[in-house]
Image (cartoon, rainbow, N blue to C red):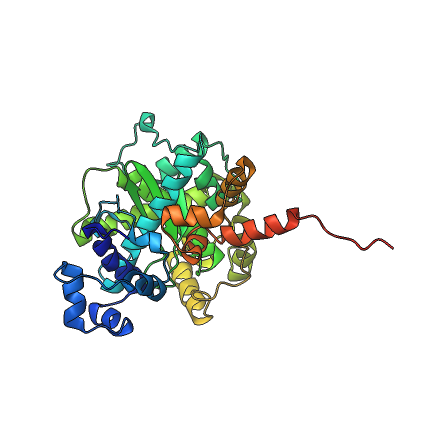
Length: 373
């Protein structure tokens, strides 16, 4: 294999992806730390079996080390909550997962025509300085997308249809619920599907808010005040996008007790906390009742374990794309993974287990043999 500097850079990328330090990597490869550092700097020639061992260690194909990253961004461009609290190892891994997500997206764009294209809706004349901008924007998006005022059935599929690149974040990290970023003008959203279905739906709407309100804004939130303001705006957008005020009010129970809210949340497929917040915002609950409900929700553990949970929304795009490629003929999953430079596990995790679904689909297409007597 021809060794280039960018391949050596991919070792660092693999370390970030898997949370390996130099010392941990050197120890796992049975190489003295000083020698390993000289390998990375190019001061010493790599042994012939280095790449094979690295491939096995990091669970990536050899082609991973041949792919040159085209992604050029930093963490300040990524929208996600609790940025200050996140560990450096998680932050580094997130960058690499975003890079892999972009590589998957680019592969499909090269091989399939007429993929959904996102429209930022510049003609909406959104006023970011308006106090009601998040809610107004949410209703405008619903109107433009033809959603009416009914509950959204599958928000992940909806975002995919509208051209947003949605991926599943393969990290069960409490500090990161979801994130969004624009890469070459294309919006990407990564969701932590380890959370409850209600939380994932709200997170998806929250990231959609960042896309419409913040990602294409030239100003970058560098201070805590601006950051908190944007997070608040995204929450308000998400609440209105999932539960339009007019429809919420017209269908709300006369008495918004905890028992009735438990039933009502099933209609909108949101959390009990979201129903409580929305009811208070629309003056269906007094301040005192709202705070009492918050304490009761916490005391019952409903803030961690959602009562009467709904089903998870799911992706439909990636399985469809795999079927399209398969229908063309000459398609191989292994060839695709090799071209992208990604492991089967990472591809599957990022694309909502699409390879598992594709394998089931292929198995179902095989002729079933019967014994004829």
